[in-house]
Amino acid sequence: MSAKLRDRLVEIQRSVRTRPLFTMRLETRLLAVGATPTTTRRIGIVPGGTFEGERLSGRVLDGGSDWQSIRADGSTLLDVRLNLETQDGALICMTYKGVRHGPHEVIQRLEAGEVVDPASYYFRIAPMFETASETYGWLNGIVAVGIGHRFADGPIYNLFELL
Image 1 (tube, rainbow, N blue to C red):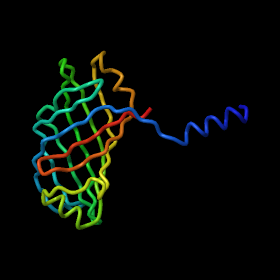
Image 2 (cartoon, rainbow, N blue to C red; image 1 turned 30 degrees about the horizontal axis):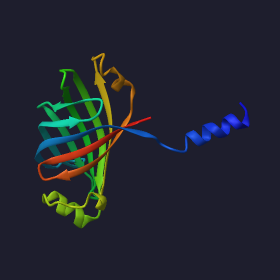
Image 3 (spheres, rainbow, N blue to C red; image 1 turned 90 degrees about the vertical axis):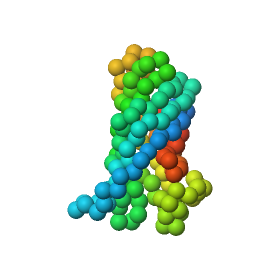
Image 4 (tube, rainbow, N blue to C red; image 1 turned 60 degrees about the vertical axis):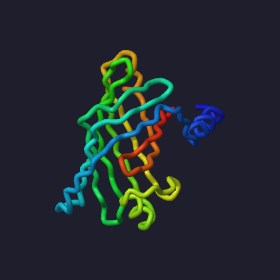
């Protein structure tokens, strides 16, 4: 491999490019399971929601859930399974892991349902998709990232395809 090609590859790998995928708003209802032997567990029941983007839009179907673990340091780990239905009827399975953390006082206000500045805490997700749809089959081969913000009735995410 030539030095020029090697330098070009290194340069390409020093940056991350993204493309907007969609904005998703979830309706949630939290069940506080409590302190288990391994974590403090909450389960977010997802009865619905919406997603909207340039390449796909639709609704979040009832039946999703978010198994949350509250760590001793106060951060929340997310483990989510959702079913999406596009406006043209295609079904898409969406899973993601994520983390939310920030200063203790900000997280307390957030948990109390108060509106806080999204820049005052960290809330990121790493979604993956699965579909049998030929139209949306490209989702099967991408990795995405998302930035979240929590409202009293559920989160809103801006998702991006990693290029």
